[in-house]
Amino acid sequence: MEPEIDDKTATDASNVDGSVSYQRVIAVAKGWMLDFMFRSLCRHFKEGKFDDFNEALSIFEAISQSPSFKGRHYEEKTVICAFLARVIHGKQLDVQFEEDERLMPLMSAAKIWLKLEDTVTDESMFKNITILLLVQSVAVCLEKGQRSSASSALRWLENNHNFPQNLRVKLTTIVTQRETYHPFFKSFSYSRLLETIQSYLDAYIEKNPSDYLLKAATEVALSSQKTEGLEDVVTQDSSLSETPSKSTEKAQKKKESAAGLRTKRKLLSTKITDAWKPDSCRKPCVSIRRLSRSDLPELTSEKSRDTTVIQKRRKPPQKWTPQLDKYLKAGVKQHGQGKWSRILMDYDFEGRTGTMLKDRWRVLMKAHEVD
Image (cartoon, rainbow, N blue to C red; front, side, top):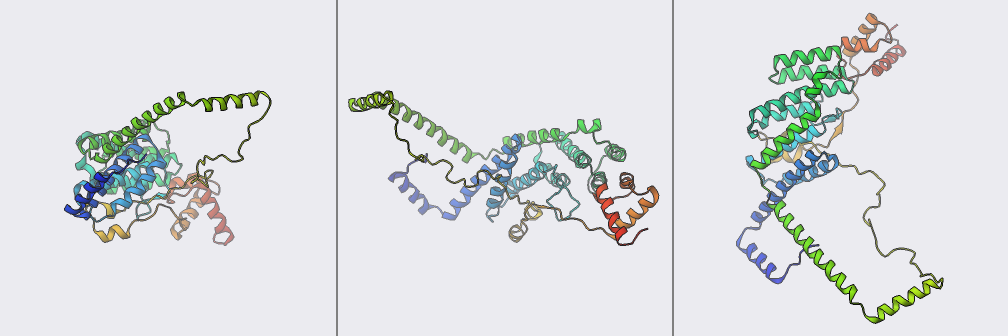
């Protein structure tokens, strides 16, 4: 129920518009909306509501494109949202956020997390999240059965992060032995990563409340509840004070019903429910846009904000290169046909599976490139 606007309120609004720049008023209102969507994103992330998170992310992106959002306050929240988007898609290895196709979501998240060090008050929490991101970047690949992708991820992390020596050795051993369910992964699990990030968000929100619009909406909701309660009381009182004619009419209908007479029903109810849901049986599809590197603090030009928002997409099929064919031929020569799992362990086939190797071998045989 929307609050009514009386003449006095309209007059006050007119006076405000005349004394303050309207663009300034819009900028303040947009700031409140951006803060509200940021809080919504954090809440959906904490509750694990994937679809609601994606919807809120799209709205946040649309609002954040305004050139009026400048300064560290808004830049931090933009980077945090980019980080959360990558973490919540962490187990979808075919989702791409970066131009570099080698970077899977958690690898991209680990890259962005380094830029958020100043927003973490607890140094040990920053270190724990960093380690969890590094471990899960490799663990998710093994969980999906992609050992070569796990090896590639491990090499990339070694070259682009301050990788602890003992952690690197441990992960290398696990990848080599293909221990998908190693106890080490249980200690640094994906669920623990989410819980630690939630603790970080709680601490950040406590330090940076920015909840004016949320409080205002809460007050309106409470006021609406009280008004609805009063209306219910009035309705009940009116039902007790019916006129004698209505009581007589009810008694007459009761007699007709007892005599076997049926009340005529309307073919269609006058109450229209879900009028705006023509495809209620169809699963909603939310378009997810990536928060590109132009949204990061060091690259906040207006031109880059307008041109680099790219929709979430699946990785296109990778072509077989002469080098990969060379690996395949060498592997078959050493192990024989059908030993695809052993061949995968000897060479980096960039995330391909044994079935893909078998299909490629058939193509080479039909093309008479092998015996």
